[in-house]
Length: 66
Length: 270
Image (cartoon, rainbow over all chains, first blue to last red):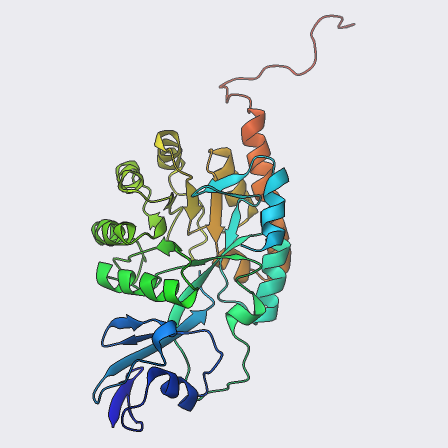
């Protein structure tokens, strides 16, 4: 299915969970936060949250800034 | 907070108290604009800062997974992080950023709220700042709020429930130092929460002046990271903040129009 990830279109397997997406992206164990359709998906629920086709996903992390 | 940090609170003299937590350093620094994370860590440790800021941005997916992450080099176990809402021009974006930051830092709710109004000056949009503050305070965030040097805005943000108010000295990154010391002094006089000058500091004397005006602390980024020798500037800033605070407590002499001799007149032999 097609999703929007950090502003870019991407194909991922149907019915992927948020946890599976993190694994696909190689971000397992990295500190980050995820929003799907402008709502935060808590890390504790990644395993249960099933991504829908067309979901607009933002994955953010901490970077240096003032 | 790590146990190291908790132990320190037992003997802090003249602590900076933010939202009930004591800090020994009154210098807060940013983590950006350094040549490397290693240089950032060296400068930050030299500065003695305990509270450091960070920004929330899209993760670079697929690029360089080996690249060290900010939170790996400067661990949240060793520093108190202050996520900022840099780059936000609306209350909605700032609120969204704070929520993501809290999720990123496992429920840590101390944030720096900044809502900008203009790209050239990076001055705050105070009315959007009020809107964001109202929402965030209801959601339990502890806000250190960036604002302009307007005593009315500063007091209003305090009364809304911000845990600290941070008036700018001058535009972000401008290095101009405190443009309106009288406004800063008024803000300090009226405040019941810590007042920290944030933005526009250029060099050590600017930091000392802020502390001499009675400010509780300073937040700076470019003044250190942008200096030719950031680690040396971090050292200078640490001393300046300490010197300014001591001078403030020491009670300076008044400024006078004319001279008063330093040596006695009695006993002159000519």
